[in-house]
Amino acid sequence: MAVIVQAETTTHDRTVEIPESVSMKEGDDQQVVMMLMPDGQALEAVGSTSGIQGRGATLSKVIRPRRSLKRLPKVIGIFTVPKLAAITPGGTLYVKGSDFGAAKGKIDLHLSHPIPQVVALSVESWSDTNIKAKIPNSISGVMDHQAKFQVLTAQGLSRMSWQVPFYAARSTKSLKKGDPAVNVTHCSTGADKNFCNDLNTSTGGSCFSSAIPPVFKTGAIYAQHVNCDVAVDWDDGTDKYDVTLKNGWVFKKVEYTDQKSSTSERINGPELGKLRRDLPGQTSWKPEISWEVSPGPDRLEYVYWLTIEGPKGVSYY
Image: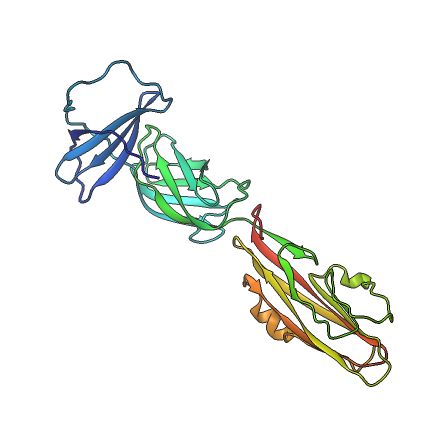
């Protein structure tokens, strides 16, 4: 949203090569914003941090005297730990530059995703050329994005913000069947009894119980298919799933196991070794698992355990 600010023309005595914005504080309540032009001209807007304006109105254009500006703080470079080239909760920001002043000022971190907010960093050391500041460990509910920080001197002088990547603190979660991120898009009806997670597409037969083995109950994807026929009648089908993560969450780990009532049953899913190499770091997985159950009656079961990782305090679905 564009905001129009009323400004007056004035002059300045700084050397600038391109138009440059300046913000400074005068007194306890007055804030001055200037746009400095290379030709010595400037636009100046004066406001109040409290919103209280003085009485009276200026009926004619006022040309202010040439303002003698103090030197503005200038950031030359930064160094961050523990993650290089990115600010992260609990980490440290080192700023190198000039004209920070001898007195301790402050550094504000401007975050914008998912909602705009300003976080004050904890300044541990301050000199005219070097600053060390701690990023609060409590920052949560923020996604990875391009953030900005701004150095403000003790006199309230500041230059335009410095852009820097923000890398959110991470948390992990194990997905379970019924989780909002896990969807069964097709549970095959090829057998007499068919269960995919909590979806029942059974077509008949009364053999075997549909109870899920205890070890399988913690899985994200689970299926059971039962062939109740005793004659030579193979049952087969293909199950399909969709697991999609949002807001910077990715798969971190996958495990798999199955159980068969005889050596004749077949389960053909993604090759586990390749899956363990390729799935971590991805945001979507749509496996298709084909199967065959011999007559007996016989059954098969399979389960996938999925661990995901993403920005702390941010929803993954």
